[in-house]
Image (cartoon, rainbow, N blue to C red; front, side, top):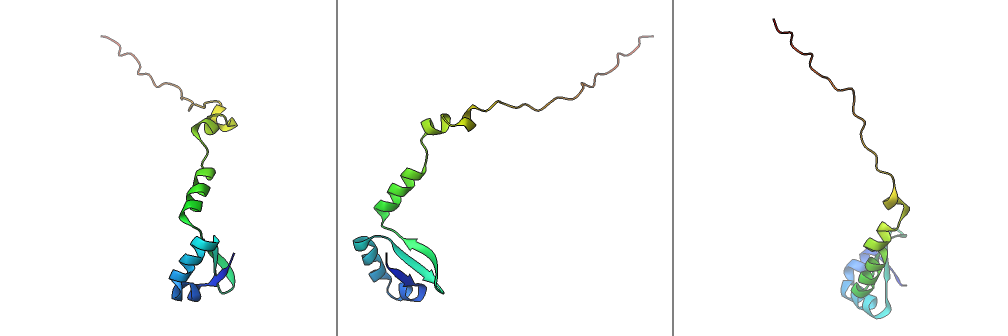
Length: 85
């Protein structure tokens, strides 16, 4: 994976895109610290699909089978019957 400083990536963006498509992901750094990665769109879609669990996987997790909790109700406030005169 080639590393591109931000200024170089900005100045040579079309070359950065070509390298990404031809060689795969390209790292972008700012002041020597890696801050971003440019990946080809088809690889991004593949990674995104792989990261999302299916509905079946979600329903089979322990979190999906937790006991339901309900709010407790307080003592009912009932009106006192009105005395007839």
